[in-house]
Image (cartoon, rainbow, N blue to C red; front, side):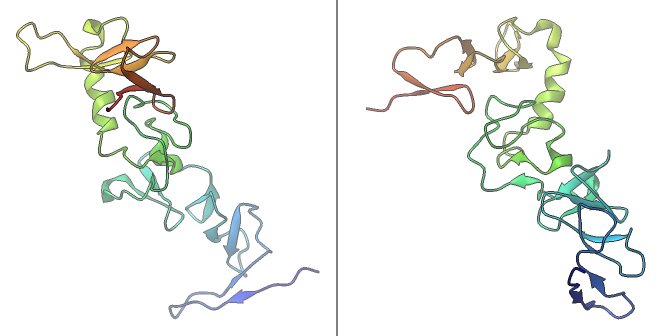
Amino acid sequence: MKNRLIVFPETEGEYPYTLGKCTDLNCYNCDPIFPDKCKKCATGFFLYNLSCGMSCPEGFIANTLTGRCVPRNLNENSFLMAYSIGSCINRCGKKSADCSCSEDCKKTGDCCSDYNIHDCDGIVDRSKIVADKCDKNCALCEENNDDDDKKPICVQCPNGKYFYRGKCYFSCPEDTFKNDINSTCHEIKS
């Protein structure tokens, strides 16, 4: 028989939790009277309606600090991977080495730490408006309000190309070096 550790509730009226007897295998802590009702999920899972899942349903985002699915309208940023080395520069809608910049990353709690800084949601939405005018060498474009010809600006390259100064290259230009995590080129500083 497994040992059971009882954790007493912090607020009055709650049932104590038991460890190791939950019916949901992704549950870390459940109600002892109703073992199918989870109170806390195992690491990597998120609590929604008293059960655990690897992602949150539509309209919710993963709060990686509390391990819960919270309504998207709460404007929480805890779905970000604060210790990620990946960046959403040139990766909006894609997966990076250790994090994601795709629209679903908020549901799974694995967004790159700069997801909001680069406004990946906005980039993907704005690119849909000018998709038919976007250069064939680009994956995503945005409207150009600064230039007289109003040709869209390239903001992301397709897989296999590197982004540098608004253009896509098969290999980085001279005097630059490549960053394979984000598929970008950077100037060599002397």
